[in-house]
Image (tube, rainbow, N blue to C red; front, side, top):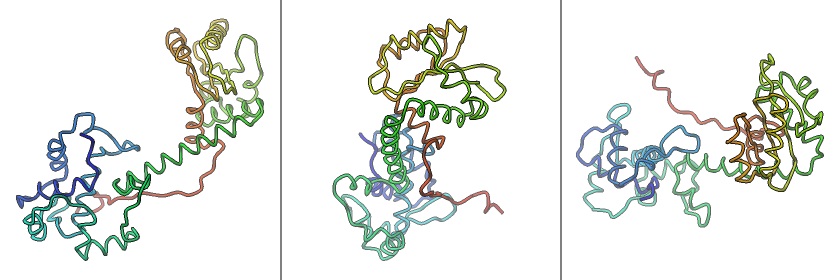
Length: 303
């Protein structure tokens, strides 16, 4: 089955705690993952940030909401236990449990109001998915969506640039990634179109211990195997072992297979990868707003 959303984890988690025992969250995650018949792949699926398993995040937020409703309590740090209110609710044998049900408890509605959830009203369409995601998921998936839109806008902008300016973009990105020494040094070699399919040479590191040969194509059509063969031949002619082929379009399957088959290291960077790298290294973009996600530092409270 698919990984349950955090609201679907509420009732199973409350039932898990029904034995009045003090439980640790990892134990609950392991037990509920088995109860939900999750595969190993689903158990290990991570949030987009890669910082936490999705199922652990969702069960963790289910625990938080049950605590806010007074159905669970923290007898000691890092552990939880069912309350009398929680036991009373289970005696009513509810078929399910969600945030709408939790609003019968004043503590939870107060928590929602403080969290500025605007009454927790459900929304339809695409936004409905955010309602069933945990706050981290909603934030991370929202960030992912913004990044995808930004990547699209970047590619559209790059395609409107001149070939010379595209070469400047390539230089700037590579320098930001740690190649080429400085922008001035890199700019002297990249952009000087050479023969046999090489646009320039750039230092692999600031000391210039090795060189990387560059080919940059501001294309809309797919780059095929013949172009990669030509580039590989140029590397061979220069007795070079490393090359980077950058395009604003895509590479055909045959082109990628050929790049992987040659004994020289050829890295292919397509338009989407180029845009993502520009976003990661802040090339051609600016930060509009920054959010910090903070959590309690447990070591701080060790006595």
